[in-house]
Length: 621
Image (cartoon, rainbow, N blue to C red; front, side, top):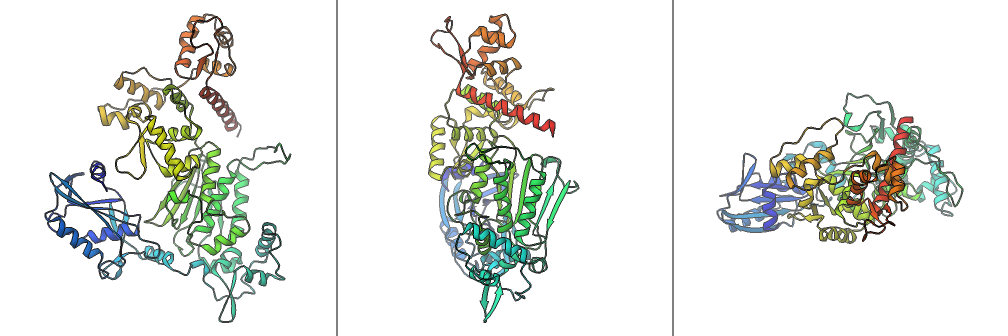
C-alpha cells in the first residue's frame, strides 16, 4: 500500500479489506483475529497508527514503529499463535502526525484454511463487512472439506453396487458418451464401463462406487442417503426480483432429490416449459432453431450450479429463481478462483473434479474452464448488462444473476454522440457501464468485452487518454468516470450533493432521472443541456434519414410546412447531438445539402426498432 493509496482509504469507510487500529503504545489484543479473518477470506490491509472516532479516521501514529513491527511479525510467524505461515508484506509511512504501519495479509490457500489462533481451530475467524467473526462449526466443516487432499466427491462408499445405480441414467449416460467420444466405449457391460471411467474403484479387493458415481448416476434411494437434502430447488415468480421476499409465493416450482443427470433433465424441461421459444431457420442448413435466445447462458449457469455445489453442506440449498427481469442462481460453496480468474481461459481448480469430469466427458461441462466465460459471452451477445457474480469467501457461497436489462440505452448513445468521441463496440460497452456504475475494474472489462487481461488493460488505457475515465488512487486496476463527466452521467444526488450541496430535485410526472440529472448538472456547470431523448418528430427524422435526405423531404415526412421552424427546433438538435450530419458540411446553406444518420444515429435507429418489437411482444404475452 503506497502513501497515496493509504490517504485515499482514510477518506473512505472501513470495510472488508482494511482494518485500522490505533496501536499507539502496544499491539492490539485483537490484531491476530484480524489476521485470521483476512487469511480465511480474501486478504486485506491491517493498519496501525490510525484512530477511528465518530466514523472518521485520524492519523495518530505509533510510538515505537520498529518494535511494533517486529513484535507483530514475530507473533504472526509463531506457529503456536497462528496456524500457518503467511507471507505478510509490511510498509512504513511517515506523516507529520506520526508513523503509520500497513501490513498486507494475503488470503491463505485452500489447503491452509481455516487459519486459526493459539492451536485452537475454534479460534478461526472470517471477515464480514468491517467485523472479524468467529467461525461457526458449520463454517469450519466447510473449510476442512475444501482443504482435504482427497476430494469429497472421489471418496469410495460402502454400498451395494448391484442396486445403487439407476439403470435409465446409466443407459442415457453411455449413449451420450458414445456420441461425444466415438470408439471409446468398448465395455461389454455397464459394470466394466463404470469401472473404466472411475465411477467404480477397487478398495480391499472389492469394487465400490465413489460419491460422485452415486450423485451422478445413482438411484434415488442411494442419492438421498449420500445427500440428505434437495439437489436443487427451482422457483418461478411472475413478479420482478425487487418485489421478492420470503412471503411471496412462487407461481411454479421444481424440487429435485434425484441424481444429477435426472436433475439436469428436469431443469431443462422446466426451463423450456416456461421460456419464450422464437422460431428461426439457419440460412445455411435450413435447420429450424427455436432455442430461447438466453438458453446458452442459462444452460452453462445451471450446469455450473449442479456440479460445483458443496455436496457436504446439508444446511443450505442450491436455488434457481426465475423472475420477470432476471434469473438468479445460488450455490452453497464458493469458487476457488477470484472473479477475474473465472473469466480467464484455462482450467480452474474445482471442488468436485470427478463430477466435473463425468459431465465433461458427455459435453455437458465446459472445456478448459470456459463455463463462466460462455455465460458472459451469451449474455453479451444479447446486449444485456453483464452477469453479476458474488463469490462470497466468508460464507462460502456463489451467487450469479442474469439481469435482462439492456447495457446500452438510447440516452447513452445520444450522450456519446454529444461528446464527439469515436468509440469501438467494446469501448462503447465499457463507457456505457461506466455511466451506469461510476466505476469499473479489469474483471468488469473482461466480462463486458470477452477480452484477455492485457487487451482489457489496453482498452481502459485508450479511454484514459480520451479523458473518459481515470484510475483510482488505491490501485487494483480500478477506474472511475472522469470528473468532468460525472455531473452529466451519474445520478444527481451522488455527485452534486457531495460537491455543491444541491438537494436532489423531485421528478415531475413523466420526467426521467436522466432529464433531471442533465437539468441539475446544467445549473451547476452552466453548460447547454445535451440531447438526452428524442421527440416523436425527431424519431420520424431518424427513421427516414438512413439514406441522405433533403430538408424538404424530411419536412414532408414529418408533416411540417414551415422549414425554418422545423430545422431550428427538430433538425439542428440532431446535428448538434451527433445523430445526423450534413453531406456538404463546409456549406451549410448549399442547395445540394442533404442530411443522413451518423454511425451512432444508425445504432440508435436499430435500438429503437428493437425496443418497439420487444414492447409489442410484452403486450401480447
